[in-house]
Structures are given as C-alpha cells and as structure tokens.
Length: 153
Image 1 (tube, rainbow, N blue to C red):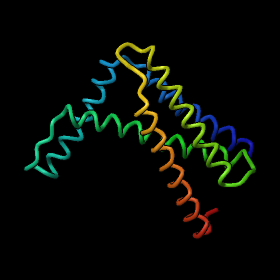
Image 2 (image 1 turned 60 degrees about the vertical axis):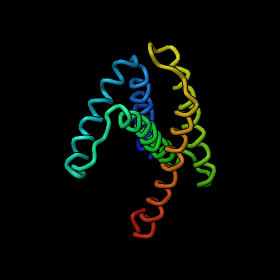
Image 3 (image 1 turned 45 degrees about the vertical axis):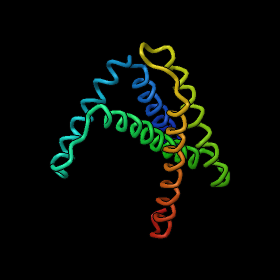
Image 4 (image 1 turned 90 degrees about the vertical axis):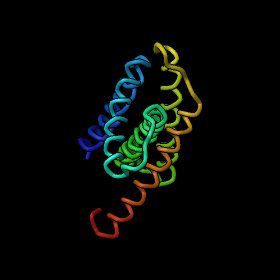
C-alpha cells in the first residue's frame, strides 16, 4: 500500500510540473502551440460540419480555456486518489482538501504567470480551473460509486 501512496503522490507532482511548465512558456510560444492544436480541432470540425466556418482566433481562446478546465479536472482526480490512499478520513473531507489544493495551485500558477513574458494573472482562469477541479471531483465520485457497485473495489 505504501508504494501505491508514493506513486499516486508522484503522479500528482508530475502533473503539477506539467502545468507549471506550460505556464512558464512566454505568451507567443504558448499561443503558437495552442493555435496548432486549434487548427487540428478546426479541421476535424470542418469534416463534421462542413457548412459552418469557424474563426481560428475566437476558437483558439475557447481551446485555451478548456485546457485550463481539463488540466485541473485531471489534477483534482489525481489529488483525490492520492488522498484516498493516504488520508483515512471521510470522503467529504478528502474532497474539500482536493479542491483546496487545486484552487491554491491554480492561484499560485496565475501569480507565477505574472513573471512570464507576455503572460498575466487572471482571476477568470482560477475560476475556470476551480470549475474543472469540481467537475473532476464529481467524476471521480461517480467512477468510485460505479466501481463499488460492480465489485471492483
């Protein structure tokens, strides 16, 4: 069990490092990467809805905000899993701690971006990150409930 705890927290730290690394990119570099992803998404959408035309700049902003949401959705699930293995408290207590960790990390990440060329701290991004974390908690709870009903846990 101790090995599982160490691995689960290592994965949390690794994911936090990925978020930090992405936030460390200057605005121009970050925008270039997200525009590349946006182009791929737009090409796929063009195949699905050929009669509708989407603007890359507008859609790029949406993709960037969804990236925040999903990064913290995943982080909350990873933190909650690590807490489940290492903290023998109630489900609600662990969920609150997981959300708190995500909110604090999101806020610290936005502060970190003040020092990155072309980037800034935005409260809106912390709110998007927090929303992702909350949805991640709900998904984790549903998956846990489903696996218990099936006898997996």
